[in-house]
Length: 139
Image: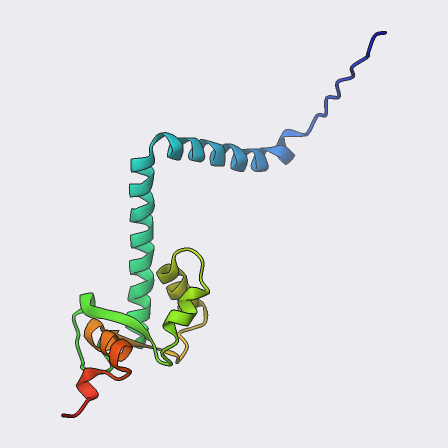
């Protein structure tokens, strides 16, 4: 008994297939490069992440003010974004992936809502540990 095999050739016009094929082919090449060059891929991803994180942070800082809302600290390296309602931990638990970048992106997309403020690390940590900034505790 002989079996017959049929081969179907479907001709797809080049202009229809090319965009999807280009995307697929580029993704395959990128994945292959990342697999073969993990150190370079990690360094490249880190540069991209840090660049975008800084750009978004600068937008947020400029919108909410360039100083700590509690003590007036102006050094940008000390400033952080604070959840006014102290719900930052609960908020971060619901985010998968790059929590900081996604938080910054959401703040910008929501047009800088009032539930955030700028605090320095000391004031932010004080609020976290003592429920009130140490600057506001009277002796």
